[in-house]
Image 1: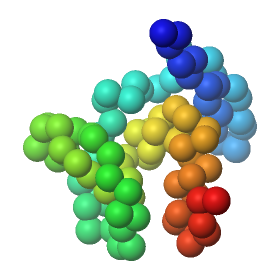
Image 2 (image 1 turned 60 degrees about the vertical axis):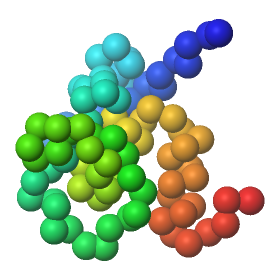
Image 3 (image 1 turned 180 degrees about the horizontal axis):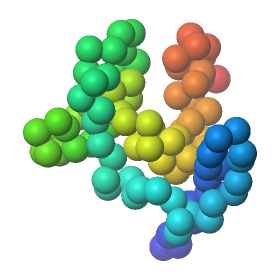
Length: 95
């Protein structure tokens, strides 16, 4: 079985965009973290991901509650999944 190669990630720094190789990605998919300040953020997406919650424990968390760095890593991990998520959020069918 072949391992899926992670895509390149765009890193935005003070309006400068640079391409970052997957090995240099800011975090891995197993280190997604919740931003405690976003826990009251509405609307929620109802798209649940496994992330480290505000208490440091793995939990199912709404995509809207991830910290920015974690959200970017999650979105960059799989472009097909990202496309489906955007379609769902905007109310389009998946077909």
